[in-house]
Image (cartoon, rainbow, N blue to C red; front, side, top):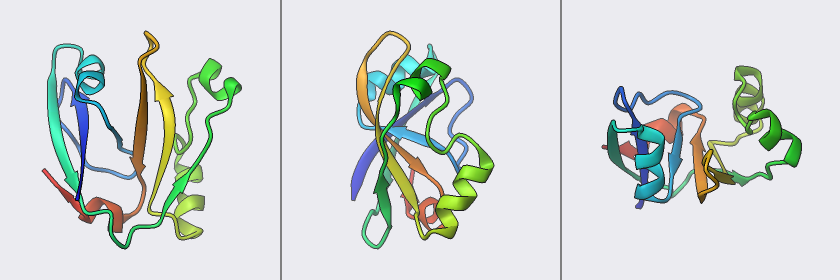
Length: 110
């Protein structure tokens, strides 16, 4: 079991593409005064792919798995989740786990 965090002003909505972070303080920054949910996920059996974020993606604020077509292609390739280095608007470094497949979403416990 692995622990991640999700920050939002509207609570967590589990869906393909949801992003979880490895630091509670970063989730709090993303929540902007909202709630931070603690998310436990059973990673065993999940196919997780490490991806790199390019400078262009950072500049355009377009991250891996943002588009539905990109998520669909990854799922078709057998990927349940992707993980990458990310940063907040203020430069806080963290790891992002983006859940893609129904199998990954089913592995979550809130």
